[in-house]
Length: 336
Image (cartoon, rainbow, N blue to C red):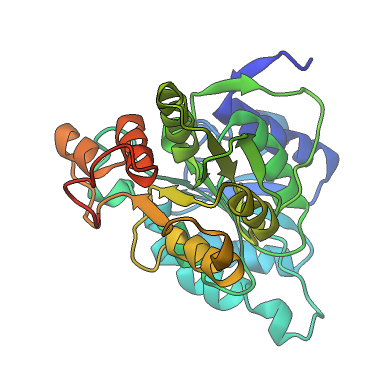
């Protein structure tokens, strides 16, 4: 049923359900994942189907959830730990970064930690400062972790299945603005390899690497600038670590220009990493300096107009594209 259209959250849920049906070692744990079905209904119906042993409600303690997931993984299970918001994962970083990410190395490969740490990321219309983080670059910086940020329902399902089957710890992040977005998703189980990017749109003038929800914004912006005669190639990394440098470099060598669009921050962020990698490996191919367009370096405001002001948007991205291509003046605020 290739033309079946379902929501991102439904695709994610279907992927987890199919893996739980296939493999009895897979289970879900977290705050409200049981009869309530999780904060955004990612586990809706799981408790009725699989029972409380495999759909475990936990106390309100992210450290305990992540720690129990690490222990279960060491014991041969494949836990999916629901940490709700990426902002809350800061409470679990010792277990994720100091335990899960290091134990295979410290044991000389004698143990695996096949745990998935799921959380929502990004803004969602006035969620406020403590529920709007986009801090995936923190986890990209930790050796031993894989970091996944799907941008559409098809990828949401294929990547969660790959994450569950992976023998190492995976941080899987769901952008809140995408949860109700619909897309074509096959009913059967399928995987998308971790570490493989997708060229969402081919172009010849400019390469844009965009993450998560910014893939949607960038595709809209690319359509806007077609009227100006600008051909944009859009790349979605899908897996932020390990990321597909070959696909990015191939595109930049073709277009000679690079723009990274990211809802995370500029400083020590994902855009900085991509630009650094391209400069180190394809400097001779660049026709102009690479750029990044990110959220402003600010705590995310609750005020809707202020939130919109600090975030990328299709119109802002389109203007940035024109700046890169020399078809517009430099933006008033060059550093965000």
